[in-house]
Image 1: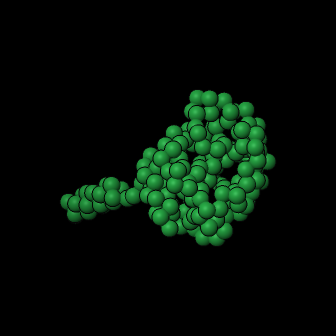
Image 2: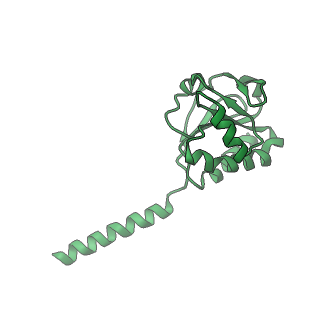
Image 3: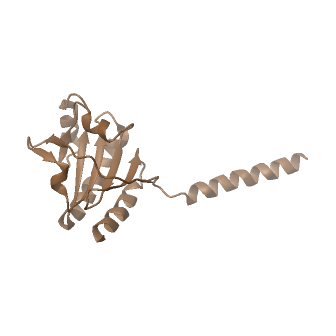
Length: 170
């Protein structure tokens, strides 16, 4: 009887390990609906309005300077932006902190070329029902939300790239 329990437990552990290795990196949730429009001040001091980006694929990334995964993700988002921006793609980094000083300090250590926006009153993050950092939403050329990522793990950037490529081709 002990041998049977051991064999069953061993098989269960093996199945869990194999299953974990086969699980895709990303856990994107397919979402629908128009992306709520917003206007936020950018790092350059200009106002940016989401609806003015119609015709482009937009990746909206909600982040905070105190968020470790946000810091890890930013260089990958910048690479994605650099690679596809000439194909009507953009990234919007939406900082959600009340005081933008910490975000600006972080951007000196981890500079990015995509637009950084400041949502100090958290109006936009509430509009998008953001419940954790980072949160990433992919929006198609028609302004429809298509994918939602809660959190970040290494490997998500490959999924972002695959989905951005597909949305650009649509």
